[in-house]
Length: 168
Ligand code: MG
Image 1: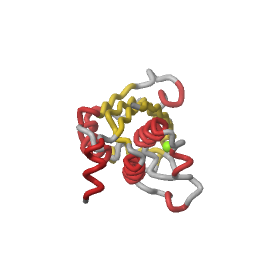
Image 2: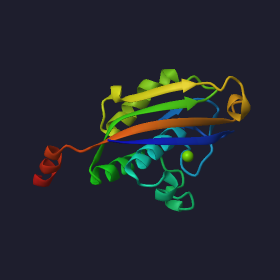
Image 3: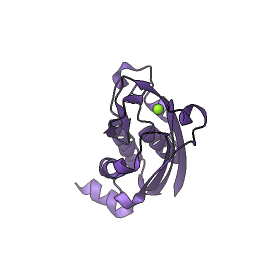
Image 4: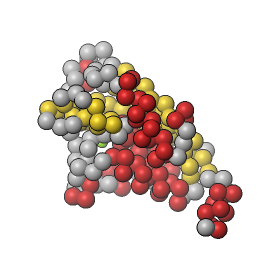
């Protein structure tokens, strides 16, 4: 088993849609970034890559590459999951903490799980999503940024699955 930790923070600015966990959330402000700015998925990706010994999101999807401009982060997560599978890993579980003063994220967790769990090829119960405020402190507390922490556990793909995929 391999464990990984990921962190990401993006500034919140007016005039951009807010994407978190693959879901567009009405807020009037969105996360600034080269991609869609989905800090939740970016933290998750770094946790997965860290566990697999595969570097980080910046080395895999450089923000200087026009190919990734405006790309939706679920696509990046899908690419990473496929990469892990090729290395002989599958995701056992993942757990995420989002630090955001606003908006309220709890009502959106079910929709996020519906998007993320199938990409990760795990049950929805194997994906933890939690939201915290920053108690009004600092840039996050003033509503100027959202930060995310994620941990992910990888386990070896069972031999029977590897053999099964060779047959087809
Ligand atoms: Mg990011």
